[in-house]
Structure formats: structure tokens, C-alpha cells
Image (cartoon, rainbow, N blue to C red; front, side, top):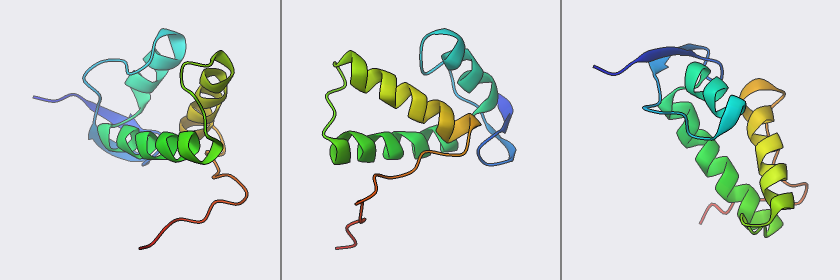
Length: 90
């Protein structure tokens, strides 16, 4: 039986994550308050950010940026796409 959380992103009860997806306090906060569906939404957002900003996840500055964006995505005003971002609908 999967655990349920009241997802802060979806604003509804949903299946919770199986384990904290990120280390530390932020990872625990996500585990306690974010659903699997919302985490999947973040993974897509993160991929877009990495591609559009040409980030290298091994770079400490890039990791710090992505961590801030992740916190904003779930617990803040959201994570906005880059100013010139245009989704490819092909």
C-alpha cells in the first residue's frame, strides 16, 4: 500500500514518494509534502532548466541554482522558464 500525502503542488491527497528524493532537510520536506506526480513534474522542469541554461549538474553553482528552483517549484512562487524559452510543439 502506498503512502499518501497532501501534495503542496497539486493541493490534493496523492501517492507519496517512496523515499526522500534529495538529501538533507529539503529532501525530507519534499518527501513529507510532495506527491509522485508532482515530483515527476519537477523532473521535467529541471530537465528544461538544465537544457535551456546549459547547466552541468556536477557544477556546484548549477546544483545550487537547481536546488533554489526546486524549492521555489514546490514551496514558493514556482519555477519559471528562462525568459527566451519557447516550448517546441513539433
